[in-house]
Length: 185
Image 1 (cartoon, one colour):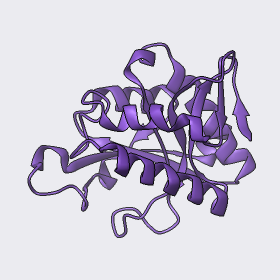
Image 2 (tube, rainbow, N blue to C red):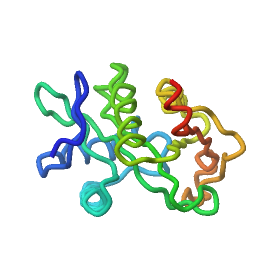
Image 3 (cartoon, rainbow, N blue to C red):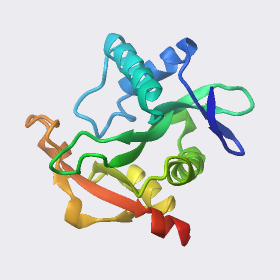
Image 4 (cartoon, rainbow, N blue to C red):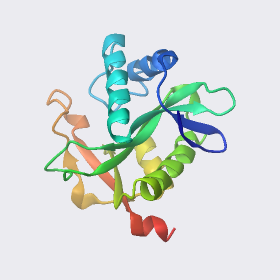
């Protein structure tokens, strides 16, 4: 099932044939540079199964991101409810993504991210969409800025699920966009 299409991309439900790409991005040291660890294939498969279940339950989640012309998966992107109280209140929805390195620097996440914001505000009627990343993750924060989110330093937090063994990954910066701000763009 295709959720959204852009000029070059489709955002769709996961397929069994997407598992190798999903495992690739979760094991890649460059993609996972700002995460506490990479995931072996078994964990990656379980994570993909969880992503599929969450999508089916809520209509929100991290969907496969694929090229329109070939349907080749290149990563994932989506909207998901956070589970980070008290740092982000219950009901907060984040936009997030991961992309295989060979597809970096082609504007794919910006293109799909803009479409997903529209989907979140128009289809789901969200009041706000946030994104967060490790403070020095310049690639992700640059995308956040390009899709119109603004830094909200008052909401920055120390991520509770980042282990103390990786203190350089604990501090997360928050970017946000309200429905009103999106409508005036």
